Image 1 (tube, rainbow, N blue to C red):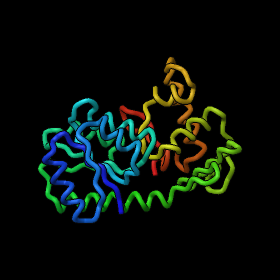
Image 2: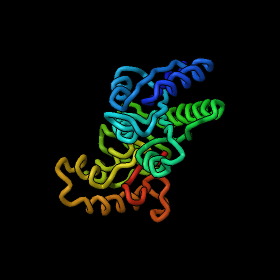
Image 3: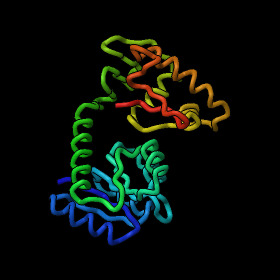
Image 4: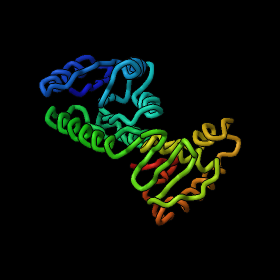
Length: 228
């Protein structure tokens, strides 16, 4: 049985979604603001989240960013037709999909089922075993700080390794260059442009075509992600 977290400040919406999901044998948890969602996510095993955008305390976009710091669980945004920019921002910040309110119950269930299938397949393909992270043809061994690409050991500097480790530990999550700098250099982002230089060098080492990268991709105006 999969656990679905439904987050919306309108109780009528969460109650309706709960009925649809329970009819499909999903276990449902409900939250009415972003902070309550984070609290439930911290203590329960959640497999998918339906997240409203506009909510009190912490909105859906901020809650999604906080969840993406720790998890790749599928997140589907619930958004009104007038919130196109929120949809775009949400997808760039880590949401996997969105559905427009008012929604068709059959479409809602189809998107839930589709994202859960994709997530379970993804989880089986991304391997973390004995300090080894493997995504596609890139294998990072944190025990001996080595990187292997398509069975070939590559030379990588400590800073390049730390950047790659950060991104591979959080596949598909977008990091700003300031965020990468602060996490890797462990200091305020005094010179974030240096991140771009290191990203370019990493691409030259792990990508077949650095100008058309398969793994290490830019999200224009926002930052970088390691794509699975």
